[in-house]
Length: 420
Image 1 (cartoon, rainbow, N blue to C red):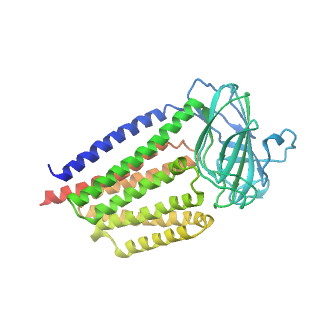
Image 2 (cartoon, rainbow, N blue to C red):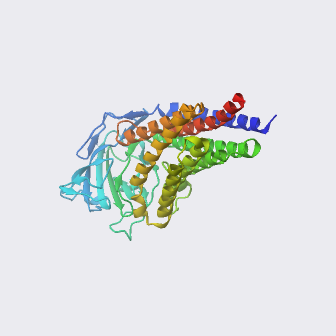
Image 3 (tube, helix red, strand yellow):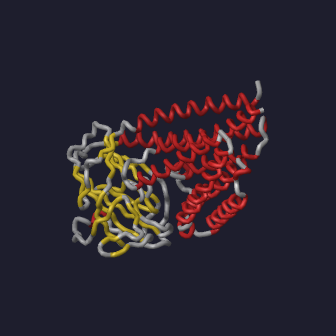
């Protein structure tokens, strides 16, 4: 039996198992009840009908008490006059209005929220995703969660990005949440994602499912990488195979460095600045591999000037990221997103030309691009609070994108042999 046939069988068998596991995780994740009927009003959320026996989770979205340019100890609120304002969570500081002033992206603040419900003696948990870029959180004057060290100056603040799910036992039916946040090294400060509250069982299960889903995405991408490296050496010595393998490997590493930040989970003391630069660098390298893969797959439809411009500009972004401060690097994100968006439009043009020129496998490339656009909008709408972001669904989507491109390469060889 030819070696490439064994490789195809290996890839199909491995990815089938991964998709089955991801589908099971997806079904399980939707059994958690995201409760949206509770409203935070002026720093208070009343959830007196919260049922600990149900798999409820509450997104703590709304107006929290907010004290800009202050890090107030949690024990000081009882004897403090109310000189705070209210600020929307989740949201970032840069350009936002609070207490009659316009906030900057860098600075420090205290957030406060009171949760009222049947919480005494219950095993509870908080899920904290993206906070930029150092915080400490107390509940009823007891420290529950920490990322880095928030202070009032750049020199004393220690940044970190690490999504956490912290458990605690309610010592009262009223939970007083106080959070210090400081940011001096990123263009935007504040809470990017909702803080999620629920029972220990529901949130720990949610955390395990999301982490396992992310690991399965990485494993799936590595399976595809191994397949195409082997395919290159055994059957088809085309550079497009190695370019696509490089793209898969880069995205696998990116999945390890972003979203759930498995890199930081496994290495908690990993330097924040290096981790951030690594995460950003994977975007630039992925675009380089992506455009070279498409250009090599459809050389007659590709404008060489476009290909060279994308590669050169991406390398410039990469060099700026490697040799600039994290604060400067954070400002590269928006211009790169614009550049990447324009590049995707031109890639779509190449794929459409390939379809017109009877490259039947290009339909699979086109489908993967439409799926990518759908995932981008899905993430954007989720960040706007329209619906809850499901990381398992996200993992399935990205794995499908790469699988469609993998099938396109295999189909190209099939159609070529069929024409002969």
